[in-house]
Length: 361
View 1 (cartoon, rainbow, N blue to C red):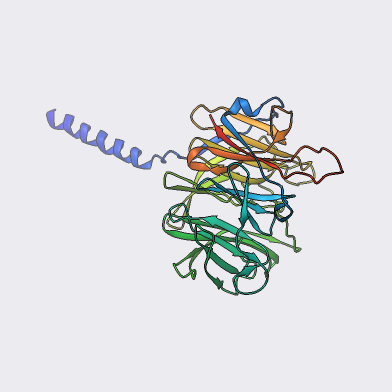
View 2 (cartoon, rainbow, N blue to C red):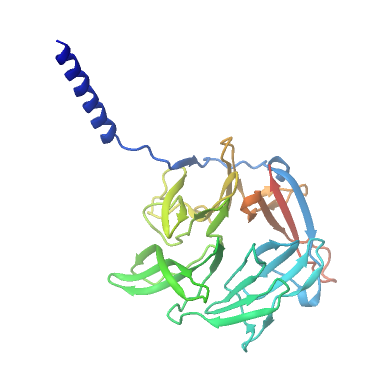
């Protein structure tokens, strides 16, 4: 009887181990529900801890009609003016000068396709499509070189993550079997800016050549040594690319999924949502997307509390203007907005916009 008892215990243990091993591991994927309805009354004061307004100085050599992106380093704002040059201002809005020289000769660039600032060294990296340029923190040109000529489309994103350098290129209309392919690839560079590794991020095959962009290139967001990546697909598909990935060692792991209201397709089979970005800061996940009538929406989700805000065209400021928030420092939950100057009269030149630095609660 005693032997029978221990045999039963041993059999039970084996069965328990078998089922424990057979049980599927629980998914670590974070799922976040995007609200079905827009909240029209959310103000900047509802979500922010502080707001700093910076009126950019207006000058003939620094007149800004459209801003592509804003960078902040050592109390200086680097304004990427559309796709052309980089203008530098202090935090009082005073114009400090332009980065580099425009032109087609050595040491010059015609237009900008990507830019970043190395937080550790203060050096500034600039891509003029296939031309790479590096500047000192004092804005002196340190070097330039041509990038691999096979990358005809150049780069629209560049970042330094730790000690490594990464660029992302959007390649449109590559001829493949069955039509044309739009592809997104991530490249890793060595210290001499030679490509040493490539990671395909997406490939969409179409019958016709179609190339569109949503105007956002904040593909990678980083804080506390962690890096997250999302690259949009602007062409029509029968499913929604709604997942933010964690990026490490040239590998991607699904991290967070945005559950948009269904159905994702309309009666014609077109996507209802075109997701422009998904970014992760220390305490928030934020996304810009366009709906079926091309209206811009922003969803901001506080991870710990689960509180989410969905707004159309932006958050209301004290003047009743709706302002869209872009990430400036993921580490600090710091965002920025661009507010056009109020129109005064046609008799005088319109002022440069106001940059708002917003610290979320």
